[in-house]
Amino acid sequence: MTVVENKWLTGPYAPIEGDVTATELEVVGTLPVELNGRYLRNGPNPITPVDPATHHWFTGDGMVHGVRLREGRADWYRARMVRSTKVSEQLGEAPAPGERHGGMETANTNVIGVGGTTLAIVEAGARPVELSYDLDTVCHSDLGGTLPNGYTAHPKLDPATGKLHAVAYHWALPYLQYVVIGADGLVEQASPIDVTDGPMVHDCSITERWMVVYDLPVTFDLDIAVTGAGFPYRWRDDRPARVGIFPLGGDPAAIHWFEVAPCYVFHPLNAHDDGDRVVLDVVRYDRMFDAKRQGPDDSAPLLWRWTLDTATGTVGEEQLSDRSFEFPRVDERLVGRPHRWGYGATVRHDGAAHDNAFGGELVRIDGKTGDVTTISLGAGRAAGEWSMVPRHPDAAEDDGWLVSLGYDKATDRGELVVLPAADPSDGPVARVLLPNRIPVGFHGNWVPDGV
Image (tube, rainbow, N blue to C red; front, side, top):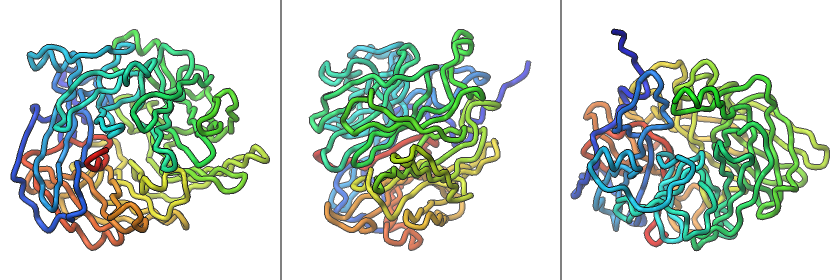
């Protein structure tokens, strides 16, 4: 009998057993007293049975990890499985309340605070899952009856209005949906965006003027879906790649498309207006889900700049760096505006599993020059997506801290890492030591108390 190995189920990606609670956490260094809130991160932690031959990293059961900080102390660490029906059955529990949508309910990709509520979210049509402050599943939510279908993993918060702008999709819908959520956590707008072929639209961008849509050649494949494979999307050589813009908060019927060279983008770093031009900094792959279908292994993720000229209809495409990295972030106060500093986590791209294949170094990106520098986190240490937390609301762009969940191979334990944003190479101002390893996951955010 042949044993099928799947790197997305082993080593740093392997799941942990289930819910964890720990208090009186040890802190190495000094936690800034200004950090009052929770650092939360979502990611796959498959505890329901899977077939290694077909399992895709993106489809594992969701688990949210959180560390609560208060007045220089680390009050608790919690890890909670997000209760899909399958997870509840596996744990011998009654299903969580709330309507499911379109056969999707595994919210394993991101976790945000909006309208005083904590939401675990995912792309491809699932409802958000509301969590308690302590990260227990409350319900699968249609946001008070205002969300007509599913949602997405990557809304963008407009700093000027406090509204969340997003592009959602589901294989059974013949269009994308532009969804705007107000600061009260209720949907204000849900409008169709006309596309063909059912593209996988992982993320979006905003500027002060524009909503930006990425329509790229990874699309729904019915032939794969009917086999029962959990991830029915693949690369298509015959489909063009394009980027669309329409007025932020406006009607998607006014969208204008710009064609770009074939590629895939999971995550843009940021976007901004420059007169008649729209400047997009994106982490770009040459191909995706083509030869390798179980995870993002087809090509290296590299930083590119696309400049859309709305006056001429032309696009400039420029590679800014040859350093592979992912999960790009900027100071959230500058989303859709010119920024100076961006951050990411290095990716070792060779298709194999390694203890530090993801996040062994922090990437710091200079938005003015496009220069990319890397900062080692130390031997055997790695961390995921970094959130920039300003010292106070009016602090300078680099006056604050970079926060992420990490891993220390020497102890086989996770840790919350806090770096000084002004000079991350100075090393952590604090590390909160956690009781268990945290599997390599997806997206995290700092959620201050009251948000």
